[in-house]
Length: 110
Image (cartoon, rainbow, N blue to C red; front, top):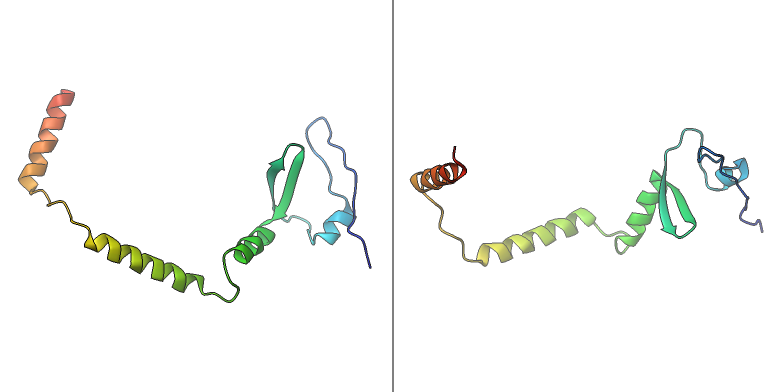
């Protein structure tokens, strides 16, 4: 059984540090990979690749094998049905809108 590599790293005066090769290899981080840094608490910085973030979000999104698009569409349809049952304000005529606009401009001195 292999252990997860651990390394002590130092930050230079410009705030830069090097991730040791053993850590990069164990985390499958390659040359020129883009990493996202976030603060997880005092003295705790987490570095993640975009692929790792996507995988984490997908894993936390719900039951595996679920069709997220179908769930989103169903949610939108349900929201539309609820909104369509609400009473709507009567729409203004073009003349009413123009009069309101003119009153606003007059109040602004324009």
